[in-house]
Amino acid sequence: MLDDLAALGPFFAVAAHPPAAAPSGPWRPAGELTSPSWPLLARVAAARAALAASAGRPAAEVEPRVAASAVHLGLVARLVSPALGAAVLRCPVDLRPGGLWWQDTAGGPVPLSVPAPAGGPGNQGEWERPLLDETVAPLTAAVARLVPVSGRVLWGNVASAVNAAAAQVARPRPDLAGDAWRAAARLLASPWLRAEPHPPGPAFRRSSCCLFYRLAPGNPSAVCGDCVLAPRRTRRQES
Image (tube, rainbow, N blue to C red; front, side, top):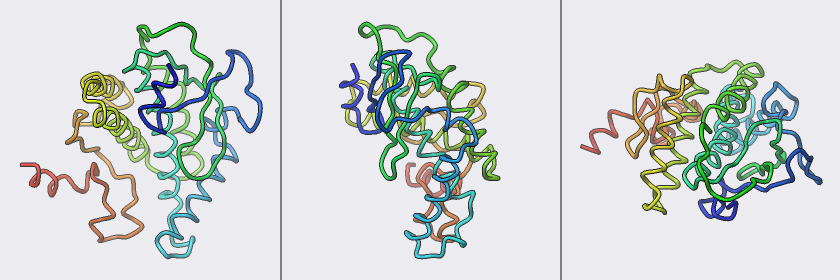
């Protein structure tokens, strides 16, 4: 089942360890991501330096909130993708912090290890509430406590990650597209995300900005495709 999940893409792939056991090696408890921890703060500092280097600017000129948003968006996408993919494949995957482990690597999707699922494919039941309530919401709160950044921006990141995960399933697997967009709709209907005005789909627009445009103010290429700052131009093109 985990091989099928990994086939959807690197953001969907997870390792597995025996339930109620700690994996050996470089794995770290995911509680470091759901509390204002030093590893999380260090990732923000590293992202700030990397963003500055890519923009050809001193790190001091990159706002900490931009780096924090970048870290948050990457981690949220890493958590949402396997959860959504598992729901589409009807493969139970537990991403709650108590049994979730991660590796603090730089570049690419952060490695994750989940408790080994028991049994074959089946109905996952209510998977979106544990994901958002127990993992995504605490991560979002932890980032906001470490760096002053708007909750609207951070939850917009979550909505963007949800839509992107569904799109990553739908594009190469049109046979799974309907289930992928329905899974995304379940997440966006949650109390955390239902303020988003646009439904999931190729034309999705989030209601906030991830702040990446702050790296190159006035440059249209610095605005993401699903950004609230880009809808007028994009909608004219779509019409």
